[in-house]
Image 1 (cartoon, rainbow, N blue to C red):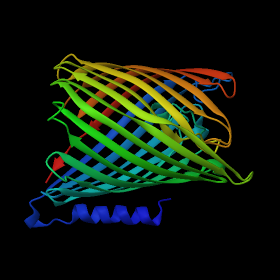
Image 2: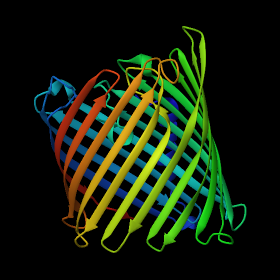
Image 3: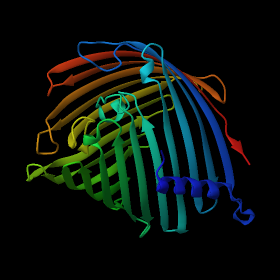
Length: 390
């Protein structure tokens, strides 16, 4: 069920989008959409010994409303995922995804923004693409609230301040429920006088995780740059130290842990092809069975080739390492490696209808449990959407 604060934000967002002010010369767009996805999965639970396969059908109707004026942009979006398993019908579910966000240009140099999101999901592989972690089938509710301000102090320098609150609840594994609060000031400056087409960047991030019986405080500072190597190539990098303090209540233990965080991103594109490479390391929330966070290293490569305006093929390769020691970042040891490979083909059948066919191979090496599992997955997706302007 939606929390009262999120309900209020969604209602206010709806009122904002439907309140038509003639003098604002705004543009209102409604985009209904529906997706049909059929997949075969030969290892639903990513188990190392007891493999269970199934055919899964997901129907996803959704609606996005956007209001734009000279200073204001507001978006309200919602989607249902109706998940049906052919054999394992006990896993059938209705997942929810709602969000409301708005930004307002107070002055030409000052922008304020706010966002609220609610997500309820239940698939074991719901976080596989973003974290590499395999979760159980218990339903999870996530709420995210963000407030921020962007400032253009000069023509060369900008600054921002962002606050984010997260609440995560697992219905059957309350031990891994948590809330987090983070504050991140950041700044950037153009360095064209010294290095053409280069921007210097720095950011300070303070994040506080509160799990049942364990508190984690993480502070990091990064310094980096983004550089346009040419008109069709871009490189960005940032690196810096982190200090993490973990407090475990039942054994009255406070543990300090230090390390580094960073990211490296390379992008290249042409008229027909594009390539994106990324490497990152940071602290992130852990699994659904162990309270605490993990140190995550992620490496990904994504390439696409366009055969024309309507047809393209792509290949994605990704690696995630999630590690944590008992009493350092979590209540138990976590040492998991995930490898993922996904070739895909996408075809725009018309201006409103597209088709996507892909194959996904996953290797999950759970070293803290001494188990290794594989999965093969074939997916067919049809997506329809149409924008309706006022």
